[in-house]
Image (cartoon, rainbow, N blue to C red; front, side, top):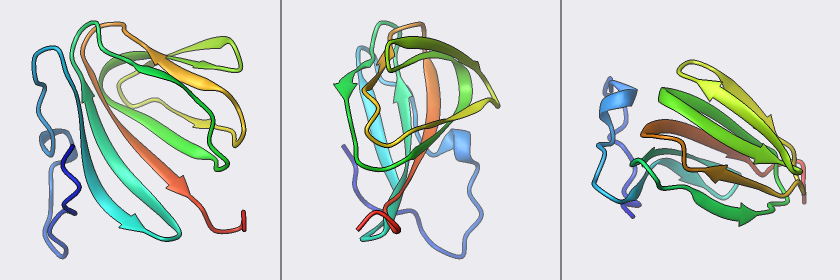
Length: 112
């Protein structure tokens, strides 16, 4: 996992920030602050994330491909350009469903 932030004051093509790696989930931090963070992730075919619950709302946007996100046991299928807010304290996971890339934004302020 690369935790180096992106260079500031420079234009970036979001989908090109991260590449697909065989049999891997790759995470690149765009910004990391005490009040939240923004990360871009790539998932190779057959790769997903295990169930987790966080105390913060999480904004998730698909930037390439399609993904199945399960929130509180209910599947949501998102395509390129679509997004969803995963509510705080809701169990969620990402099921393998082909290659895709996404951006996740977590805002921690207001939850102290």
